Amino acid sequence: MTAIGSFDRLSWRMDPSISYSDWKIEIRRTSSSSDVNHYHVHRNVLAVGPFHSEYFAAQFKLETREQQDCTSKIELDDATADVFPLLLDFLYNGDDTIPLLSAASAAALYSLSEYFDTPKLRTTMEDFYRQAVTMDSLVDFISNAKEHHADTLLNICIEKSVVRLLEMDPKKTARTLEPDMLLKMLQSNQESGNRRYGFHASKLVAECCRHNAKVLSREVFDQLTDMLILPYMESKAAIFLLSIDAGFPTAPSAGHDLTCLQKRCTQSIAEKWKFLRKELKNDEELNEAFAKVPSHILIDILMNSTEQMNVALLDTDEELEETESPTEAPPRILVRRSGNPEVNGIYRRDGLFQGIAMYTRRASWGGENCLFSMFQCLVGSNIKRWFISVIPPNGRPGTNKDIDFFSALVTDECRVIPPTTGWRRSSDGENPPPSLLY
Image (cartoon, rainbow, N blue to C red):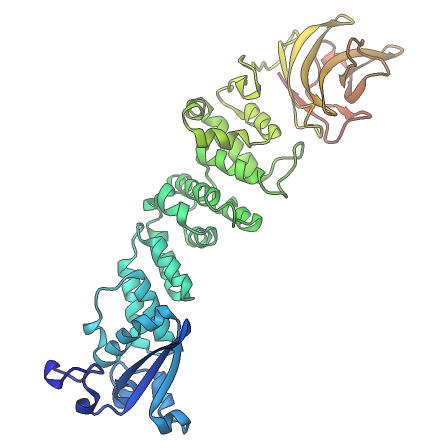
C-alpha cells in the first residue's frame, strides 16, 4: 500500500489503515474463481461524492451479509475487471486521473458505468467516443462497443460515420465492417439522393458483402441493396453485387423478370461497358465475379448497352447491330428473356429454308450439344409460322421430330424476318415466351 504522503487527495490506492478505509470490494474474475483482487475504498466517496455510483449508494443502505462484512463481492469478466481500478479512480477524482484510453478500455469502462450506475462516467466515455472515432479506427471502436453491448456507443459510431461516409475506404474499412452495421449507417444517412454519395455507397456495400459472404443473409443483402439505400450504382460494384446476388439459393432464376437490383446493376454496367471491358482483362477479382453473373442477366446487359457492347460477352467476337426497321434479314438476332435459358442467346443467319433466312446457334439441351434453329415453316393451308426448335442431327426443319420451344404466326410485318414479340410457348417451351432484338 502507498503512504498518505504520496497523495495530495484521498484515494483508494492509499494504505487503508492510514486513509481510514471503511469498505472493501472483492472482484472475482469469471474466467478464474481463484483470481481475486481486493480494493479498500470509502463509502462516502462511492455513495455521495461528486462522481458517485448509484449502485453503491443503494447497496450501503441494505441490511445484508455484505453490510455486516463491509465487503462487496462482485464477479466481472476479464475486460471489465482489468479497468475496474480506472472506475475507482474516476469515482474519487473524476476524469482528471483517467489515462489516455483505447477503444477497448473505453468500452469496458462504459460497461462498468452502466453496471455501477455512474452517470458522469457514462457521459465521459460517450464524449471520448465522439472525439476519438475516426474512419480508420471505426471498426475497432464498433467491435468493442458490440462486445460490451453498448448500444449508445454504437449509435455514436454510426453518427460519426454518417457524417463522414465519403471518407470511408471501401477496401479497408468496409471490408472489415459487419453488414448489419453498414446497413444501420446507410439507413441513417440523408444523402442517398446525392449521386456522388450513391456511387460511393454502392462500393462500400459491394466490398462489405463480398468479404462477409459467409455471414451475409439474403434479408440483409436485400436491405443493403434496396433502391432507397442505393439509388445509384457504380459499374464495378454492380458486377460484384450481381455475382453475390446469384450466390443465394433464393436468387431469381434465369428467364424470370429481372429484379429491381438486377435492372439497376445491368443498366450501370451497360453504360460503362467500354470502360469495363478493359478492367475485366486486368482485374482478376472483377473477372471472376463477372463469370458468376447468370446468362439471362448478361443478355440483358447486352441489350441495354449504350455502347453496343462487344458480343465477346456471349462467346463471339463480332458486334451486334440494331436497326430500327430492317428491310432484309439481319446477320444476327438476340433471343432473350424466355423461360428456357438454353434458348436465349445470339442466333446467326445460316442459309435459307423455304426461301426465307434461317438462324442457328449451338447450346446444351438435355446434356447434349444441340443445334437450336429459328426458321419459318408452312404448317397448313397457306398458314406459316416461325419456330425456335432443336432439329435432330442431319434432320430437316419442320418435321414432327423437331423439339419445338416457341412459335409465332407469320404476318405481313414478319414475312422476311422473325417478329420481335408475339411468340407463344410450344410443347417444350416454358413461359415467359422470348422477345427478339436485331
